[in-house]
Length: 187
Image (cartoon, rainbow, N blue to C red; front, side, top):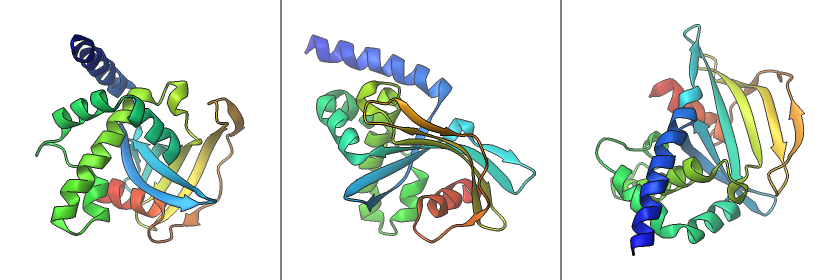
């Protein structure tokens, strides 16, 4: 029991120091190619440009890796999640994705646990991302542009870096970009 308490204290300090560099917030998840991918944006990297544009960093993780880390560190993640879950913080994505108030509370618990997990472990090999992308969102025109991105292999090694901006793309409903635009431009 003493070891669990000590681990919680150490990870709490680690979480607080991680937040200074990045504060990863849940966007949504999607299934494709037989895998579930979960997207997060860095709240601290959000920069408003010229009133209508917002730039932000986004990371994509496999559900499998998130589940593995959660199962390995369940007690710590659950303890920290309970400290964060309060009337003072409610994940914006939950407000957008879930209209039913009862289901919102259930979803908020799950989302906060994932946010704690990603903030604690996103720099470790246990939870390496699939992709890290710098995006630009046009709030007025509802368009998105990828400014740069990094792709990673299963061990967390960078396999490709692209530092060339793409063209502007429309955001289809219920996609990561659409939900991110709803969060960043409206909240």
